[in-house]
Image (cartoon, rainbow, N blue to C red; front, side, top):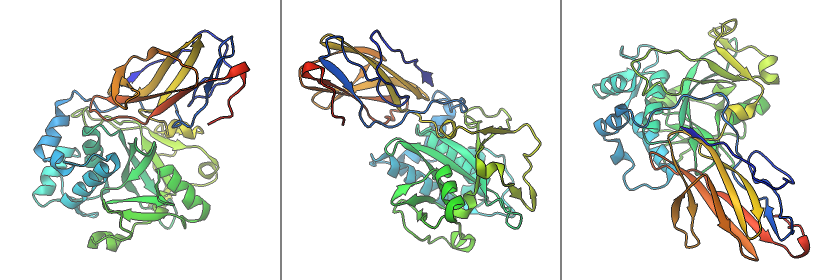
Length: 380
């Protein structure tokens, strides 16, 4: 993980936003920084523990179970995630009532599963957390449930940050599914929104890498998962449980403190959930603190004559470098602060982050236009 502080250099800033560009112009009024549609940047205030790239457990997991072969030849990030999720689902049998006794850590669970053992949702989420993080995809564990007095079951799942989509997506390896609305994969809080709104009528379940609307797995058909499971969700802050092993750890639980949370009770097995009146809940009214944005860049720009000074910042776990795209489309490493030369007309610059796993973050664009007579840009 690396956090690089953004700085504003020199001239007066005319307008700023956390996720975008500081709009400013030179004293001569020749060049103006234009606000463009970049992925929104939300700072990380709650989740600071990440799996360690340098831990030998990372490569050992991939090598022991042949995970590189699962995604061999696939370059699309989202499809790679779906293939890995599908592999987990295909290699672990579902057993809710009497899961195979074993340590709750990925190697033990997978070894037992490959020997014929069977497991419930907690075990699936532990394995998926480790597998996706071992490929450099920022993944965390969640707890969820309908939270009703008459239906207080609980479910363990994961969320993964998908750079291609610039958003968090809930992924469930037990059922090999995710949820979509209008073709867009949803985060846990987005599913929760839909459930509280109308019971999730607009939410579609998608199974497997092919995103089918039905599952062929008899266990999944029997359990009939629905969006209703996500009326209540909590997020573990202990997001490094794989590489910190064998350290024993619990985890505080992050919950969105909104009107639905305050006016209702989360029931589990007929009684209010265990976390009430304990120190474990970490409640926040700041939704953006939960749906913070790994690998996304925010920038500040200062125009000085015929050059601009660009400052980049990002919260990228296992950060390796920033990169800038050349005019010919090639990517090259760059510093977090750099000078760029400007020409009359439109100047476009594109940046991204790269982590130690060689996973690239969403593209971030900077545009600086030449305007005669200090005319303000029409916007892009």
